Amino acid sequence: MADAKITLEQVLHVAKLARLRLSDDEARQMQQQLDAILGYMAGLDELDVSDVPPTLHSIPMDAPLRPDVPVRCSDRAETLAQAPESEAGGFAVPLVLEVDS
Image (cartoon, rainbow, N blue to C red; front, side, top):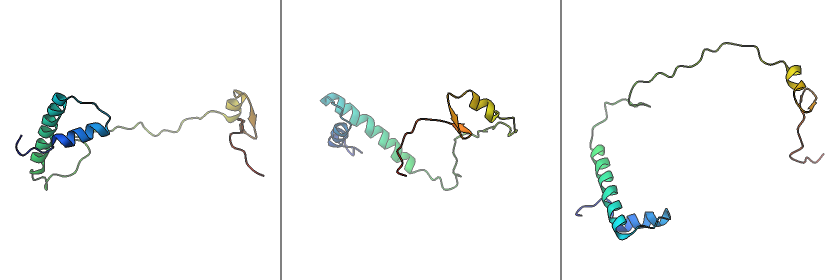
């Protein structure tokens, strides 16, 4: 592989970091596949995109939101009546952190 974008040693190093055990054939195949990907990316680097505006999506997309319409919320007394315990107008829950007074 003349002019390879990634060496077999680099592939084996990354495989070791990822805790992958590759056979010799798998490592060579991985090198070829990664080299093809890196070659494709290098081709993209050569494109002039100076006139292309930045976008979030490759196609126009609408993100419709639901209408912001106020609705009645639950009544506090009604909600607290369903709780196992309430205290001082809120839910009573077990102490999680101890606080020095």
